[in-house]
Length: 186
Image (cartoon, rainbow, N blue to C red):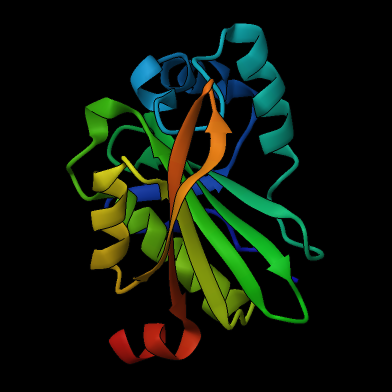
């Protein structure tokens, strides 16, 4: 079980639960085709974003396996919502989880996703005592692959044309890191 103490602060960011006030900021992110490019969903209209936000608001703790922790990411200096981070608890028995992140393109290339991913790994390994955390991504998403490699995650699988996404076959990459590997790096 994991009930983080909020807000979670990194060097430049604040991670916190989503609130109803995040609708416009989340819509500004999720309505963009370049944001949805490598995701399972396409650009979302305001109603779809509202539905997604309603779910995100309920995901502020991990009480049992199968749940997701979804955190709003805002710039500490301005309070601007720039993305979100996700920690999914796959299995209690196997102590496994998964991380994910989505950011507004205006904030790509600045190291924010790295800060969030590090915080999510810490929550998973230190807060939930996971043994193994993965990151899965579209095989074309080279920027995300580089980020996971910088975190010390190893590429364990390249699944060729394993999913039909938005009408086309896509490759999936799977990265992973073990708790002991993470702790040896930090």
